[in-house]
Length: 110
Image 1 (cartoon, rainbow, N blue to C red):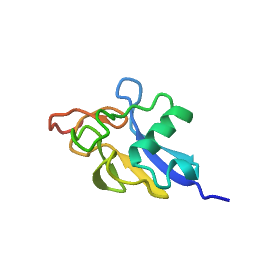
Image 2: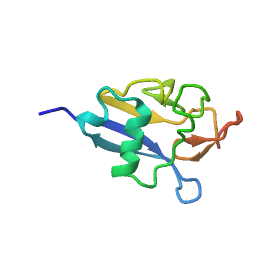
Image 3: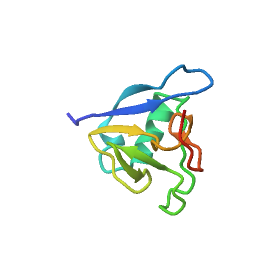
């Protein structure tokens, strides 16, 4: 039997939530092994969390719009492969607009 991955995703909607939270998702083998992080995030969005907000503008490692933290390291979600255990968070020095979407200008979140 193929292994699933555990993906923990930062969730926060400043309009509806009092504080950020983490949600854990079990992702089937074919949706994390050998695929980019952005594809795993898209799978979570399409199958388990339709209200998850994230950016995936170009998917070609050009624009930088999908930059996030994966296991505390800044990466382009379209450029790196998913891992069996991942913690996915927004950039820490940016204001969170919703979930993994942050303000593009450098602004300390409140």
